[in-house]
Every structure is written in C-alpha cells, then in structure tokens.
Image (cartoon, rainbow, N blue to C red; front, top):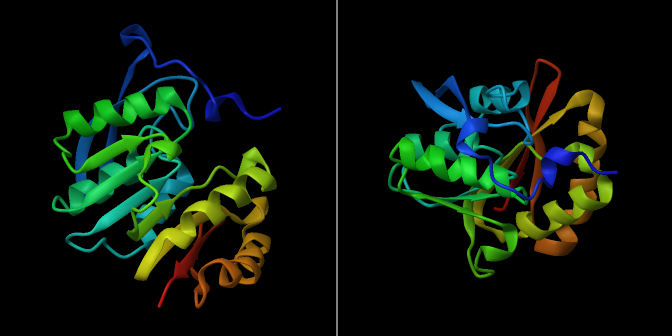
Length: 205
C-alpha cells in the first residue's frame, strides 16, 4: 500500500487549511498547508537541507520542482529568480491546489503548477530541485527519475535530497548506472552531506 499523502485526490476545503510561517529564499513568509500531503507542518528537514546546501538558481531559465507538495522548492526558486519559469509537478491534487494558492499569495507569477502529464513533453529544464518520494518504492521512484532527469538541457543540473538511511548511496549508484543509457554523457555526484541527508547532483555537460 502506498502512503496516502502522495495520492490524495481531493483539494482541501478552506476549513482544512492551516497557515504556516516559513522562511524561503531569505524571506519570512506565510503559506497554507493541509493534512493529506507530505510535510503539512511546514518545511521538512530534507527540503531545508537542500535549500541550505545547493547554489542559488540562475536569474532566469526553466526550472522544475519534481514532487512539489505544497510548494516550498518551487516557491524558493521563483522568489530567488522572478524571471524564471518554474514548473511545480505532483500527483497529489490537494498538494497542487496548495502550491497554486501559495504561489498566487506570494506573487510568484512564474510558477506553473501541474500534474506530470500536463507538462508539455517538449519542455526542457535548466535546473531541477527535488525531495523525491522515496517511500513510494523503487519502481515508482525509478520511473519518475528516468522520466524527468533526461529532460535536463545541456549544462542543466538536478539536485535531489535523499535521507542517508533511506538508500541515498544505492540511489546514487543506480543513477550512475542507469542515466548514461538514457541521456548520454552525464555526471552524477554527491554535492553535499548534512544532517543525515545526501544531496545528489546530476549534471548534463
């Protein structure tokens, strides 16, 4: 059985919304969350590690938050790079609704919130940030990564945050073994290690 919060179908009612004070892109802001999604209490530890450890996004380009939840990574990218287009992708309808609400409330007009199949297959990404849903199981996770990582542009980079005790090192090896057959020359490395998490970097030269 898959964890419910990845696949909840219905958006939250106004009565189910919870306001949370969070810090994103160097700013203290207020967002809304709800039960039935990943990390409804605010920015989770893994996402915080990613935000602390990765370089600032470029000033413009096409970015992706893969598995966006209520939107912390997409919002941080959009706030740091207002000229960028940021695709926030998730399978959870409630999470997508929250991400839309938060982007609108924070004036992040470059954020495009969508289910995976709603993103044009021709779109290519300069930057991907993701706290991927490890607990959905290897088959779903691997399908997700082999679908989206090959859509990096030349010179594009993806950063994935993965808890060490949930298989970050085995995922690192799998990416090194699998991605070259799908996207040609690619560099997979560990960009950082902090607080029990690894930041894996996938770069297309």
